[in-house]
Image 1: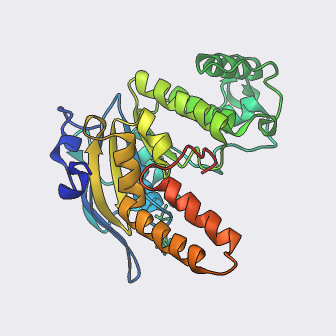
Image 2 (image 1 turned 120 degrees about the horizontal axis):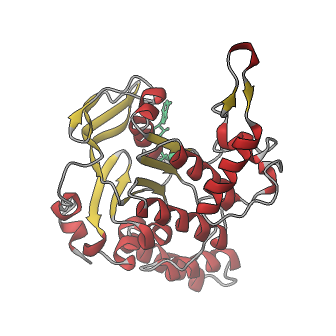
Length: 305
Ligand SMILES: Nc1ncnc2c1ncn2[C@@H]1O[C@H](COP(=O)(O)OP(=O)(O)O)[C@@H](O)[C@H]1O
Ligand SMILES: [Mg+2]
């Protein structure tokens, strides 16, 4: 396939010019004796979507927890706009304009839209003991900010639970943008969504990039990453397996890099052999073999994962 496997960390992927908004150099993270991350270097630029790909357990969430100040790296450097920094916690990260949207914790389903939008940072009027929430203003701001993302909210009092999964992610993204995020980190925002809803979230990712934000998009689906991503980092068992710029890869190249195309093809052939040889072929096994054959080298659009 492409240069990706021969040249695991392609210099092209790191070559956007200017200081990256966020950068980690050679970071490592240990949990006791478990080495969750080793030798990870990544750059995220303003006005770009940086994708972090990898299977379950690859270390994606650990990496974004370092980027969002939840964990401190045990080794390596963290830089914001070229300056080495140590983030003591998520609050400090937020103060630096780094906003993280977690898949499940992004919104509170039984709370109204406007409450979710502000979550304790509501505008107020009056002073001292007379200070009150400015509910009217909160509702107006929320409506306007969501309209910017193309969501027309009829009733700001409706619960977040009434929104679709994609719209909930959009609300969390709009909130981060409104509160001044420069870097948006999205941990698997599309993993629980179907094709159409994923499409909605991908659209907001593109919008945030067009506003000049640096977006870090974590996913295990190359079909979600490729259309919106500018550069791609692939993690495997805590290591950086490859990094590649969009201009140096294709959707097939990315899928193959993700799935280990050659491994899939071989596995599929072995399974085909097994099912063909048996007197009464196991239909489930045959189905798995067919699916694998379809997925190697290019996975079909599945949307659900
Ligand atoms: N708090 C923790 N304590 C111990 N091990 C952890 C902890 N968090 C993650 N790990 C381990 O680190 C590895 C990477 O996990 P994670 O970053 O969650 O992967 P991903 O998000 O790619 O699925 C896994 O082996 C996981 O078990
Ligand atoms: Mg994870």
